[in-house]
Image (cartoon, rainbow, N blue to C red; front, top):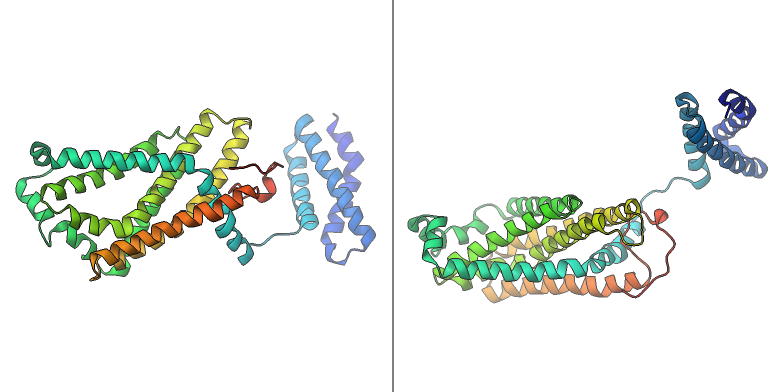
Amino acid sequence: MDLDVFVSAHRAEWDRLDALLRRRRRLTGTEADELVTLYQRTATHLSLIQSSAPDPRVIGRLTQLVARARSAVTGTRRASWRDVTRFLTHGFPAAVYKARHWWVPAALISTAIAALIGWWIGTHPEVQASIAAPSELREMTRPGGQYETYYSSHPAASFAAQVWTNNAQAAAMCLVLGVFLGLPVLWILFQNVLNIGVGIGLMTSAGRLDTFLGLILPHGLLELTAVFVAAGTGLRLGWTVIDPGPRTRRTALAEEGRAALGMAIGLALILFISGAIEGFVTPSGLPTWARIGIGIAAELAFLTYVYVLGSRAVREGETGDLETAERSAVVPTAA
């Protein structure tokens, strides 16, 4: 392609498109049709120049011109409350539901490992001695010790905010680092499991497992579920790098990555709820059964939300992908 000849042949069209864009709010019907036609032609011209005779100056002008024309033709889209509602009733639950084959096994295996670690520590005094000195262990596990005062050592609001921040960071790391074949996700997951297992083991050895469960279950059920969902999504993203399926690896990663971004937003809301429970309910003076009941109710509400709204949204073709306009045309299939 002779770039100079090409530019000379089409400059008048580009100038005309620029003129129409400058007065686009006062266009007649005929001029609006002309703008659309010129936009399509200019986009084709830009593609030809990029592939055959890339010139930074010409490409820069045409890129700006095409972007302005696209905005004029398609209009700018602003997020609305309808978008928020659809995300909460379709996008987020669908993404969590579709990832259930990853996060449900992660939850079950993690719970089993935590119980195993707790049993090992609780039945082996030498392992307990390697964690801390006997006097320190007694201080942690005694009535009114560190395990109990941890939840009431700070004002409820600030403690809830701190807990939410820490858990949101852990969930975000699982989602972001999943692309590295999921290995960092497994490490983050193991650290959470280890902390729970140590608590179970030490409080069991002190004969106070019921106290430990009464403290962790009110908020821990929902909180750990959110972490397991994030970990399962991260592992799924890592597996997409290895096996993208019928999609190209680039397309698969783009779709799964956007779904993971939506998942991060939704999980931040779930962790906010669990943080509020941990800050206000766990250290409250409510009976243990009432505090645990609140935790179970929150967990059941979340699972119902995912399995009812999520399965329905998936049957309707929802994928959890934030970029609706970028989705491929697919026929909804049974989950």
